[in-house]
Length: 256
Ligand code: GDP
Image (cartoon, rainbow, N blue to C red; front, side):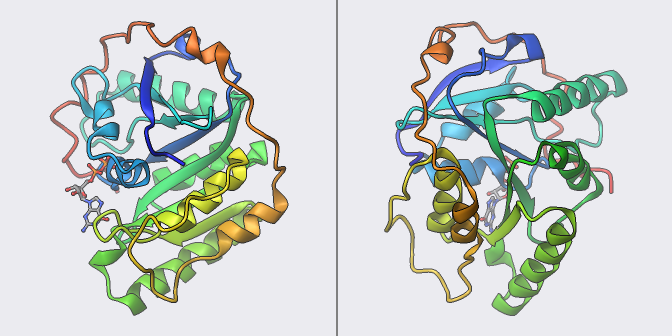
């Protein structure tokens, strides 16, 4: 589903966004959570999401076109310890504005390092997005870093918390390194976009493969995605060159 995705454009301000049209799926997560690796694993592309990490794009909303016509939106990683206050404020405004009011956004994928899930900033994202009533699918990444039982325990803990927040919030285990969880993620996101999963993308998963994606599908509208001519006109729009602030800080520890 994400194969052959191509970079379209970047936006730094809400007014830079392409007019809403093509269905969008956005990915967000703390910096270093494994978001880029997850996107690359889903796209079967080693460098796709690292476009978002090139200088000048680190704090931009980056749009990628999916072959099926939808858009994948890579939101800037949050939680940099040393982002100056004004920059952080700006990004809070842009991110919350995007999440709360973007009509063409179908759902949010929230990427969390399985060893540090549900940080206060993750909770903030859920609080911003929850009221839209749209689905959130959490990828607990780097699942390979834990034993199976520890990963299962983390999964249950996060699932419990999400259930308190909304019946539309789902979670699964994921590992870009081991390439596990890809089919389940495709299934969950495909249900939002109205696209069936491409099976057989990954190594065999354990019996703990999550099933929420399937459950979620039953609840979703299976609208066929519209062609995204609107966004196409913006393909060549030049990316603003701000956003250097966080460069060099991406490996810094986020505030707890
Ligand atoms: P981002 O800042 O959220 O985009 O995170 P990255 O994708 O750049 O990943 C941050 C670090 O975690 C890198 O060193 C990755 O190699 C590592 N990483 C990402 N995904 C996995 C995973 O599934 N398993 C393991 N073991 N490491 C991962």
